[in-house]
Image 1: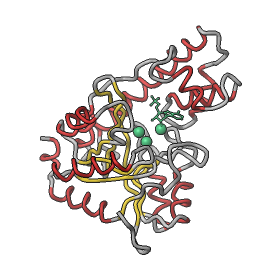
Image 2: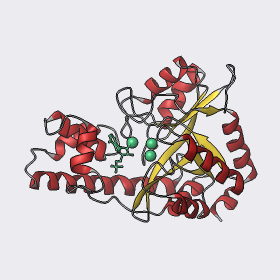
Image 3: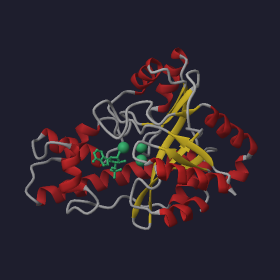
Image 4: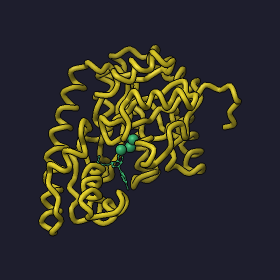
Length: 287
Ligand code: AMP
Ligand code: FE
Ligand code: FE
Ligand code: ZN
């Protein structure tokens, strides 16, 4: 898609310190303003804790902030992320689920630290907790703790040699199906969008099954997606009348996969999301 100079842009996939991002929500909003973005979706992994702060900062700076989250699910053994947009952040079903995920993430990180220690690495769970700070604890924080104590030189090295899917210290996460993640999002009155499909281990047949299990949209623009896959996902969405979203998956200036504003989509995509929400009653979303 070619964009006019005047096109208002939306980066619908951004992480803050409330998961594994480097920036406070207000800092992200400030940077978004400087980049001329009109809309951002603050979509922390299994967390909504940064949304309020971002909305308040956004109101001051003229950046619209969409309340969002990125729920961790597993499909056919592969990590599958489901973005939730326009969620009611006070919804009890959502809050209960996030609480469950937070506890499970803690247990899992403890187990992974134990496995690393069993392999002779000098790492304490407290180091990982410190790296996580306010964020939902996860492998990126284990990687940061490993860098800090000199076990590895980069996050990539930590993922590649120790904590990636095929590695010895890997422990599976709390497992929910993408359809369950979509249900939680629908309970909270939001739209469920499949995050960066085809950028992970799930292939095209899996993606179709996941979409047909109750998702409302596809993230078709993402730094890890080839233009060929992006076109394929667009055609899939058109066939199924699904929404199309996109964003940078920004985690901070020094972290991948994208810089703030990369893979942003025209604000019209957000208008379509709002229209879809108006068209559905909450009951219809839950069905
Ligand atoms: P977790 O949710 O704890 O399993 O951690 C997965 C998260 O780690 C992903 O959502 C990414 O944000 C991040 N991640 C995956 N691979 C890397 C990598 N090589 N370097 C930095 N972060 C990564
Ligand atoms: Fe992340
Ligand atoms: Fe993701
Ligand atoms: Zn993400």
